[in-house]
Image 1 (spheres, rainbow, N blue to C red):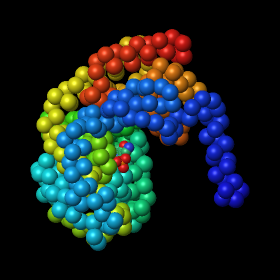
Image 2 (spheres, rainbow, N blue to C red):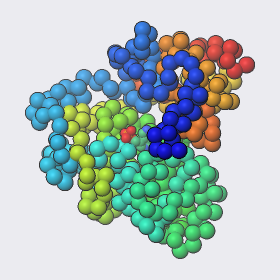
Image 3 (cartoon, protein in one colour):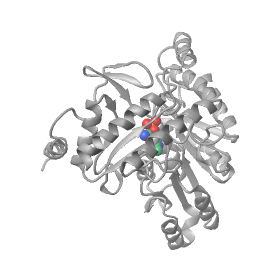
Amino acid sequence: MNLLEKLDAAAAARKAQLPTGLSAFGIPIEEIYSPTEARIGERRILLLGTNNYLGLSFAPECREAAHEAIDKEGTGTTGSRMANGNYSGHRALEMEFAEFYQCRSCIVFTTGYQANLGTISGLIGTGDVALIDGDSHASIYDGCILSGADIIRFRHNDMADLEKRLRRLGDRSKNTLIIVEGIYSMLGDQAPLAEIVNLKNAYSSTLLLDEAHSLGVLGETGQGLAEKTKLSSEVDFITGTFSKSLCGIGGYCVSNHPQLDQLRYVSHPYIFTASPSPATIAATRVALRLLRNGNKLREQLWRNARQLYSHLKMVGYQVGPEPGPVVATILGNPQQALALWNGLLENNIYVNLILPPAAPEGKSLVRCSVNAAHTSEQIEYVCQTFSKLYTSIIQ
Ligand code: PMP
């Protein structure tokens, strides 16, 4: 098979998985009305598949800051942080993140994906080891590949497996970066951070925690899992993204290790890409302030998450191990998942469909994400629709 024929074969396999109806992947959203409503085709739909956890995507303060930044600084920086793209806003946001986490320093990257790529490939290299949870996000896998380090996976959240693998590494455990996530994006469960910290200390390894889905969601001020578990000082590096609770685009790494700054000089995903636009930085700075003071939003978010999670469980759906803003239903096969996804869309509800090989262990998922802007009536409508579809699709 030549290169193009290989792509044809992959396209045919994809089409066979989704034979009819609207494609679930890359669905065109025609108009977006609010953090919870949009138009797809002729349907006004309820958005239940975005990562807009605090519902801040239309926050007037953030929009105003973005408009002002465009007027004052233009639409783009047209260059990297190392060249012409290092504005005062980028530096101020780094200081604000460092202060938020009470950390020595912070590096801002252009996306969350690049924050993982840049941090991981800057920290480890050939001869080192990346010891990562099997359910890790693609940006973690790709960062490890870019680094050239040996990649070892441990079973998702399985501490006995993590310990076994650390033990087997012998002296190499000192050159090992353990990587976990605050909330896992597939099943919505949290990493057992206390046990992970104990193991990393016992084996003198280094720990990186990706708080992409837990920023704004966990902890008293929304820092994430490290704050919730009071283990911030035990985590060596924290990465995260602006694209979920902060409703922008960009990423960061914070740390108390002074060596973090050296990453600016070695990390290709930091050096060789344009810096975030002035509007993005300005809106994110305001969103970070709203997030820090977002206790009411977090309370509403968790009320919504618990309402949906407990209802789906009660109806009989197989759900993830614990409640959270990501509420995944695990279906028996891809056809059932597709039928449920289509059934929800026909009832004007948009969620995410995740089919093998994207979902862990060959699972088929219909994944909902709730946010603080959903009203309890909207969540109730979703619950009733899931109940109706259980009878027609699952039973
Ligand atoms: N880490 C995790 C765990 C993620 O889920 C994502 C995005 N889905 C990223 C990093 C990358 O973030 P971004 O989309 O902002 O580049």
